[in-house]
Length: 312
Length: 169
Image 1 (cartoon, chains in turn orange, red):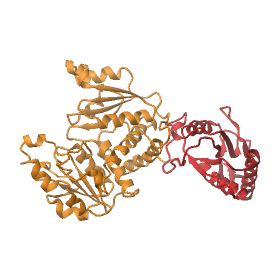
Image 2: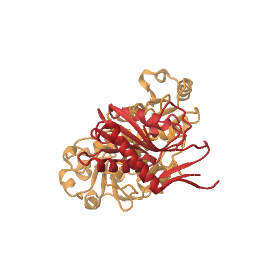
Image 3: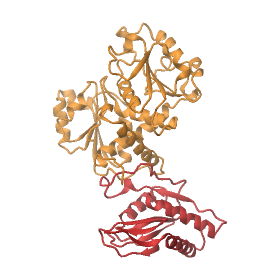
């Protein structure tokens, strides 16, 4: 494996291997000195054409824990704002010697396009509405450890609630959860569902309250305020009253159920209850696991020769 | 080439018992010792040694850990990472005497990686190396403190060491 562009490039076996490798990375992160020399001499460049604090910081931390050199490329302070094309930007930076680009771009497919212009590995850190594969992997790892399901998600019922239509997180999560065997239900008003769900391994519901007691995982997506302007939602208040996680709804979840959110949260919209008070909230675990999962991805692409097969 | 048995299960048991006594003699007891097995071949041997040490001096429990050196190797990428061989070291190693345990000592590169990895868990007061088999062909200036058996081999031979015995293939 040379690039990580989308979850459906991975087999269920690949996902399991990456999650097992993540166990090692969690252990490294728990050491008094959480740093190993595995990627010494490798150069990892973050190219974020769209704002992001947590994903960029998470990749940066991951690369540093593996002793890779890191370089951050902020678009506002770069030649891109002087009109340089994406291709010229990539070719220029690649000429300095880059082993991996971590790319976030508002256009779906931009990371795949970049693979044609450089020999470096490309890691998709979110492209348009398309994919955010490392988010899905860290979500899988969080469920795997939170519910102690090392062997897969058979029999688990996961609801993803919110703006599915514009969500790359939802697209990656659906593929990853389904690949591991979970039953996935999408919950959203019809305007926030994709126009076609053909080929999606999911069920659809508009009634969160009916589902709550049956869920093992309640996954809330951020509802972007811009959607009001597109007239996809009558009001945030209405969304909140139908789909927001209130204390009353949280009380109807099964005791073991996990509550997850990719961040950043809109308090009072999709998250009405105080997440710090929810016993099932693993939202901060997601952030912690994000670093370990990204270490696993970086090591897989740059350190293992792309081969994680078991030793004989 | 066939399978040649070098040590039987009884030989292995006797060698480990002797090593345990040598460790106690060298360190004047087991106080302050911790036994750390290298993933994966050294783990079973470290477990046996820790049990033998505790039996010799029941006053003190000897802590047992395991160390995965995959991410510290100088040949990272040439060897696959084995799942379910995660390092398990509880607490700091500051001031302890660490007995590093591996089944077979060969080039010494694994031990070099282990010494580097250990540093990240603290500063042991000393590190000693116990191996069941020293098969020679060192590529680094590393020597064991406790050896079950010195075994002349050719580089191409494969040495397999378990509690059930040691064989050369």
